[in-house]
Length: 121
Image 1 (cartoon, rainbow, N blue to C red):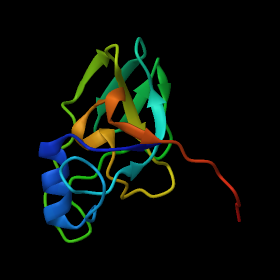
Image 2 (image 1 turned 180 degrees about the vertical axis):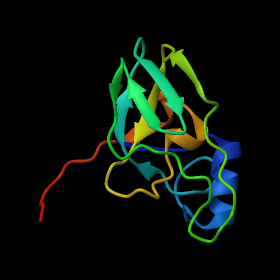
Image 3 (image 1 turned 120 degrees about the vertical axis):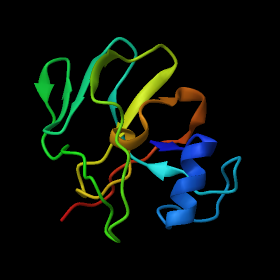
Image 4 (image 1 turned 45 degrees about the vertical axis):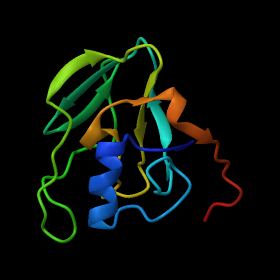
């Protein structure tokens, strides 16, 4: 899915070069991620990674620093139920993906499009 980040998250992402100028309300590009969890799912965040409904998510260990050595804040280590009207976004394509591990759930209202795989290696 393509989703616009919450403004405070987008501001930091833009300052650090994680996103570029685009069509989102803050003037940034939407991010393309898969939906990891939806309303009613239980997401647990820890230094070992994420679990969704008790199942470990491979490749989900949150990083403490980005590629330039800047500290990353991860979503608060805790177990929580995803609220209605929100989703958790995640990418297992890159260990450096900037996703819900670092900013939590996003509103479904921020969704601006879908993605489809057209080719794989």
